[in-house]
Length: 332
Image 1 (cartoon, one colour):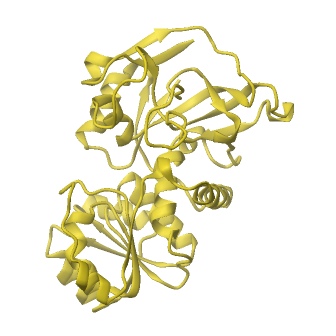
Image 2 (image 1 turned 60 degrees about the vertical axis):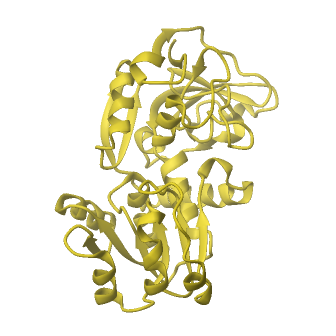
């Protein structure tokens, strides 16, 4: 079978190879999945580059997300799972989620711990299934960690991105009013198509002024934030008392200053989100909601680019460039 292996930390062209290897056999508690689609996430790129820890072996199968069909099961796994369509998550991570693990999804076949292979509802495509483990589960946690959002006003920053797009869809399905921010007219259309009630272009005027004009002081109940550093100073103005922020990135400043007392006076809850180390309970809640929304046709991840397995280097470079609007997917 063909598999993508990472041989060192560094640039994609210097460290990724497509190689013929033996098709593995599942061990106890494992399943063999014939991979149909593979997600490529920014965290996969960062791991390869060296930003998230050293190599754990001379060659490591890469990527966390994917979707396919179970072709064989190991000891302790019910034989009824053979033939099941599944989506995969957290595959390329250590048990605590903080480091790299020995498994991966970037191959024609992959060995997966059975509990990380989730049944994929029939209406959803394999390509959609490959966009759930990191983007949709991150979106769910950032949105739902503080409780139900029914009847609330939710701000989703970066509403045209992979996480933001899913966050809009989940929030709307959960009964929230959604305000999304974007940086262009084209991205505004994407956010509206996802279901956003209001879309603000933060490049056209100061975002704080636009939000206050739209919802008033304290008019936001919850924020799903792609860049906490860019918006931290806005929270005390825009968030209601006891409002909440689920932040999954801080690209503009990796060590943002915290306006403690303005946040404290309003009892604002700020929750950093790292999908790989979420609690088992949070993962279970996300999986249940995601599958229910997939089955109902209320969650459709946006895929910007498809790449063949042979184009793995170009795919990594494209994700690394940050030029995509939505997800990138490899197909086998």
